[in-house]
Length: 401
Image (cartoon, one colour):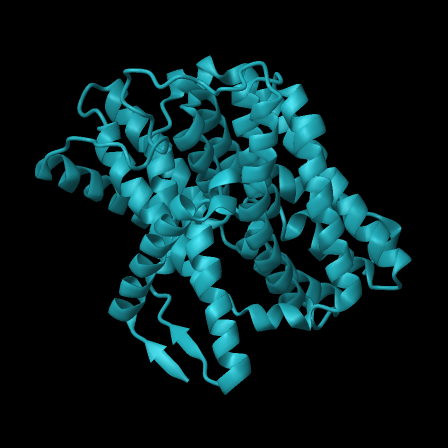
């Protein structure tokens, strides 16, 4: 086994991003279906590592010590950019989208449990192949699988959860672009939304030039560090209680409180341009590390029945995005971008959702509504409502411990 240390892993992640950028500009298929750069580059490297392992037995491992801090920094920038007055302006769309998201959670668990019983599998396995790992991601999967092992004696719960979450992360980044492209083509604005003269919002158009000073960058880094420190402290206090939340949710919440409190008292105003630069850097590097380190050979450990459940879940996600998310959210360009984001965190994670939407808005124009609603729902509300939905399903007689 060849191991890359922290610096080597950072260099490799940068290489993945540059490779992905070239691919999505030069490969017609990737251009046509607007596949995000980190997904294209990361999957190509992961496939290369799979070929290396199967042909020579060699394996390359990465130091992932920067992966979680980058993810937390990304969520901190979401919180710092969450202006409460803007959230009130998008309140109706936010509420409707939460309703749409809850509908998918119910559908995913119903499909997972139903197919598991039909295929003769433990219903808990179906639940793990439902909203726990698909809408919840690796973190939620790890938390619930631990409970399944301790309370229900499902010994392979962790392995199943990680495999399902990995599968979802890959597919969430692959189907968002094609789904959105189809919807934009059939929307009321088939040419997208024209670029406006405003500075793009935090995550729209990540390649756009943004003039910032070193002092502003240092101040923003300081606020991100405060969010990470305070968020981890709060998550530690809540751990083991009924109010326990993932660390990234606490970090995001601290960012919201910090930025809006400073703005309200007139002491300091967050510079969105600096937030956008650091947020996009964190997002891109996190996704590159997550995807290039995928051990695709571990997906082979998924039994064919489990793989069948996940394939059906992917088809249902695409169908739900087209016929429910898009239609309920207004059947326009914003709705198409929202559908791409929903594919991202409905199967994978919020960073995947942002990457999906960036790929669409870079090509067709900005969607301020989508970049206001999806980060807040995908990073904050989803974990709360998902926990409630999962606990309700566990009350079913088949799950009686």
